[in-house]
Image (cartoon, rainbow, N blue to C red; front, side, top):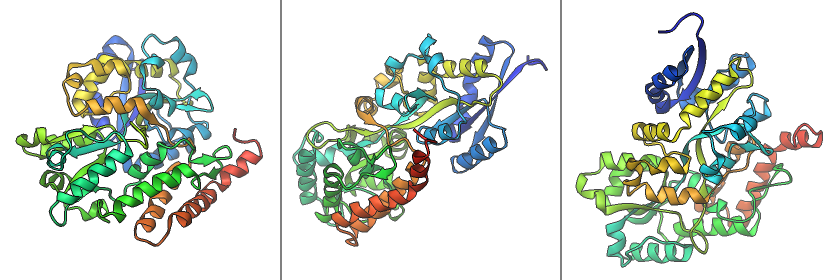
Length: 403
C-alpha cells in the first residue's frame, strides 16, 4: 500500500518496452518499501522532443530509457548523471558481463552515463533451403564467400527474384559494412567527416556492387508489399535486419517454414565481420532528487533474471552474457547468431549530430545506386555534408567548450 510519504520515481520508457516494464515493477517495490515507480510511456516518434522540452523546463524524469545514440547529445547538454562510481561498487552491474561494444556506447569522454538495458544489432536473415538449392550448405563468413553465394543464388533464381534485399531507405546495412573498416567515420575530434578513406570506399564499392550485378533490387522498404511475406515466398534469399524479425517471422510465416530460414553473423572483408552496436540504455537524470532510489531501479532492471523475463515478454535481447544463459535464449536457434554477433559490434561516432549524418549517408548512397554519383564523388559529397552538419561542433571545440 502506498502512502503520501513514499518516494515516487518517475520512469519514462518508450514504445512496447514502456507497456511491458510495468509488470516487472511490483517486485521492485516490494523489495524497496517506501519507493513507488510511476511509468510514463512515450511513443518513439515524440520521445526525443519531449525529453528536450523536459530538460529545458527542468522537468526531466528520474530514470529514463534512452536510445544509445542519443546519449552523447544529452551528455553534451549536461542532463545526465555520471554512473561510474555507482557501477564500480555495484554487486549487480558488472561491466565485464556486458558485451564490450554495447557497454562502450554508454561511455562519453571516458565516463559512464548509461547502463545497457537491451541490445540491437544487424545480421543476416537467410533462406536456408534456397541457399542449399544454389549449392551452399553454410552461410558466408567473408565478403568473397558472400559474393560467391549471391552470384549462385541469382543464377538459379526465377526472373524478378533477387539474392538480397537492401532497402534504399535504410542506412543500417551500409553502416554495418562501414563499421567493419579500420578507419573511423569521423576525424579531427569528430569534427569532420572521414568518408574519403580506403576502408569506406571498399565498403561503398561492395554495397554498390550488389546492385550493379543485379543481386539487389533498387527499392525502398515501402516498395516491398510485405517484407515477411516476400521472404517466405523466396523473393530474396538474404536480408540484413535486427532481432525483432525473429518474432515477426515466427508469427507471420507458417510453422512448416521454421526450418527453411536461419540467421547468421555478418560476413566481414576477410572473415567474421563487425556490426552495429544499437539498443537502449537506462540513464539517471542529473536533476533527479532521488538519485539513490533511481540507481536501485537501474540495478534491479539489470539483474540477469529480470532481463531474462524482460526478453520473454518483449523479444528484446539482453546486453549481458549471463542473461543469455536463460533457457528461452539457449534453446532459440535463431537468436544464437545474435549472441555471436554481439561479441563483434562497434558503436557509431559519439556525437549529437550522428543521426543527421547517417541520414545523409543514406541519401548519398541512394544517388550512388541510381548512378547519379560515382564512388569518388559520393565520398567527397558525404564528407562535405558531414562537415556542414558538424560546423557548430568545430566552433565549440575551437573554444574549448567540448573535449
